[in-house]
Length: 246
Ligand SMILES: [Zn+2]
Image 1 (cartoon, protein in one colour):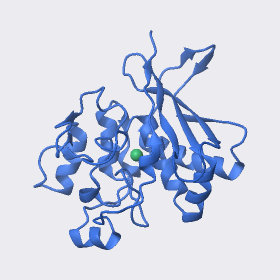
Image 2: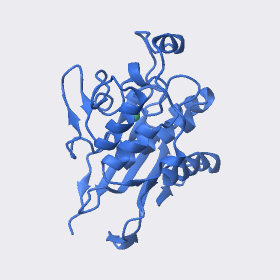
Image 3: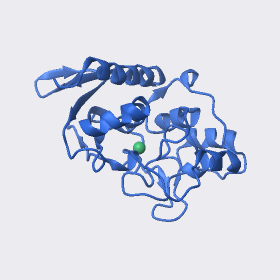
C-alpha cells in the first residue's frame, strides 16, 4: 500500500488529489511487501514524501519525483519523493491538469521509467528507436498493434527524464504515460499496468482504462504532431535511488 507523508504546507484539497492518485495505483499494483525497518521506523509498502514549496516561480523547474530508497532483493521502491513548485501547481490547477500530472508522476516514483535501465528493460538506447522489452508490456503492445514489432516503442526525443522513460507520444497519443499530457482524457492502459509487472510487481489489469492506438488523423487533431508544444512533464527532475542493504 502507498502511504503519503505530506509536508505541512500542502493544503487539504491538494492532499486529496494525491490520495486519489495513490488509491488508483493501489488498485493496479500490489505494494504489500514485508515490513522493513528504516531510520528507526517500520515501513510497509511504499512511502511517498510529498511537498509543495516555492522553487523558481511559474515555468522553469516544475519539481522532482522518483524513488529514493529501494528495498533489498526485488529493488522496488520503499521510499520516494514528489516535490512541486507552488507557482506551477497553481497554473496546473487552473488548466485542469494537476490531477493527471500527479497520477503520472506517481508512476515514476513507483518505478515507471525510473527503474528500467537498472532492470535491463530497454533496448536500442541512444538510437531513434529505443524500446521496452518487458514480456508483459510487449504482449499488451502486440494486442494493440500486431504489426508494431516485438517490443514497446519508447520516447526518442526530449531530455534525460523524458527520452526512454515514457511511451512514444507519436504512437500512444493521449495515454497517461507518454512524455506529454495531451488530449482531454488520458487513459491509463493495460500496457502501462503491464510495465509494472515487468519490473516485479503483482498487478491487477481490471482497473486499467480502455485504450486503443490513435490514428494519425486523431494525433493531428489533438495537436500531437505539432513541432512546438508545451511540455510540463519535461520540467520534472529525477532522483537517483539507493538500495537498502539487508
Ligand atoms: Zn513523466
